[in-house]
Image (cartoon, rainbow, N blue to C red; front, side, top):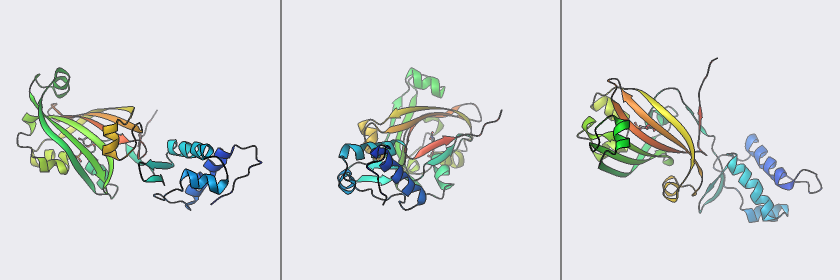
Length: 242
Ligand code: GLP
């Protein structure tokens, strides 16, 4: 793999870290490659497991490696670079990358709007609202967990099966709704146990929370959604001018 110099003034954890990074950059370690365990590494380099753990943790935090609970540590795939320009749907986004989007429906229920939800959806308090919880997958890999709210009056005959594919496609093609604009807020958060289980990551792992309010061309809100994206799989970018 690579060698480390015990008599070097460069800390050993750093040498391991740089060695792994270089192997990833040169392509000798490919995305999805299962890394040796901490024990194997410490035996191979004759260093303590603490030293190995520090190197691995830094690489995980830097997005080079991903830990998968019960499976091991793998070389990370390059992060998706999602543009912050344009009001795209999850399905459009994945299709444009040549990946197949799908959804796992966690729950689909009807609730009465709280004051906060009523304000976001511009409806009356207690009006009926769909609450839709979905895990969004790309080529079968969980990417995001979304909880979205939508006034029932916008889609009175919405059925479960529509939620397994694109909600935006359904709204635009079947309901003839025109999703025109929106507002998004991005925040950092950490996965709860439930979110971690759904996204197949570890509790406490970093997530990007995106709150989206999408608005129809008649100025009526279409949805209020909270999407949790895996921070190890996503980065967001935007072009700016001055
Ligand atoms: C994105 C947005 C959600 C939106 C979803 C629709 O993920 N963050 O707010 O509900 O796209 O995606 P689709 O049309 O694939 O159901």
